[in-house]
Image (cartoon, rainbow, N blue to C red):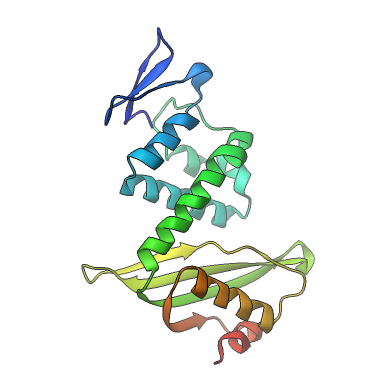
Length: 194
């Protein structure tokens, strides 16, 4: 975030490099700066940053442990004060979730996509995590992929539950799905058979 703001230690304010706005940054809090960049100066870099964090969360299967991972720390410049788990859960994640929903909708709406779906159970089968990857051709003719976050399925997972989840994603993001690919799990095959 400090690539976009200059901190004045005497006033404990940070001035935006892109406009005339200044924000208070007492005790090193930067949530106002992140929100400002996200809403006033959205950039591809911010979207890429969010996607990297989401991929770390998916890899670790624990959203708030990522603050301790070296890969998470490598996303920031040296000597950056790392966000706490509380800050991540109450400020960063809700803001990122809405940004990602909007980004996914903008990037995929009306595009022909192939969905790759994988599932695994956690906590002794009490809930099922799903991973949806949308593959599409962008405006330049390049193959791109985008992870679509979906809520876990609670309870025993069935083909009907998964089918409802797939239909919800298709409807929510207005996807034109041309194919659904999956591994050999029978529930997934049944859910996407038609």
